[in-house]
Amino acid sequence: MQNYSENKTLCQLKNTWLHISFEDDISAELGNVIPYPHHHYMRNNKLVYCWLIDGFFDTLKGVQYLNDIIARFKITFETSQYLKHTVDTESTLCPLKLRQFQGLKSRAVQKIIQNSRYDGSRDFIFYCLKLHAELIIKEKGIFSYDELLEFALINFIDKAKDRSTLKAKCRNIHNYYLERNFEPDGSKYIKKDKDLVMATRQEHAKKITKNTSEKYKKKILNLITGIFKDEYRKKDGSWNVTKIANDSGTTRPTVMKYLPKETLF
Image 1 (cartoon, rainbow, N blue to C red):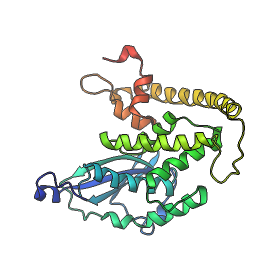
Image 2 (tube, one colour):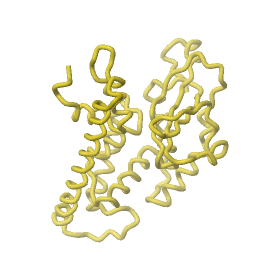
Image 3 (tube, helix red, strand yellow):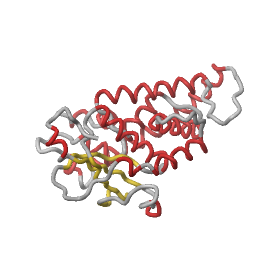
Image 4 (cartoon, rainbow, N blue to C red):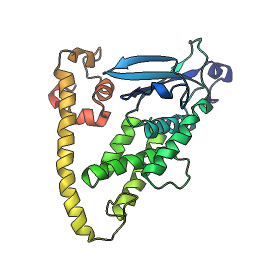
């Protein structure tokens, strides 16, 4: 997948590093479901695998291709998380083709069928978001559009135009469950008094959301006040919001929300 908007010869020299972290041990899947990585390292007690992929993915279509692979990873390995992708013009390693990740497709479809209704769609990003919505429903009975969007922005590449696509998918999923009174797929849908159901679930959700917000706030404040706080400052003294978001497992908007206002300049 290459960006031909630039000089073709230059683009043919560009490949892409994809960094994905895992909490669980997936070593048995390497060389089977997914190709062996070119590199790995530890980050926040999680193993990060790096694959060098053939091509340049900085166009909208390219980002969508990468997000599709990321979604397959996330569906297949629930604890996986996309960290970053970077352009490489110097490595002498032999890059992988996207088709070499094809094993993830069948495994992801199996997971979808086990946990949700599947219509044969190839939109793995949509199903990744939908499965996450189901998990939240099972945990607290309801979820908000903002909550699902936060998950999407943490786990997928959200460049300009593709961000609007992620927002649309989150909105559609939220509306789907809203119409069903937040009954998960697979359960027997019994029409109930919507106002009563929503009132009960929203009250429960408020408590969960408050606890979640406090957890995020604590993580962020611990990073910027701990012994390694200087690592989160840029050379000009301002906060490195992206690094704080990555290391706290949140998003840039969440970090900006909880950074003490007196420390911003």
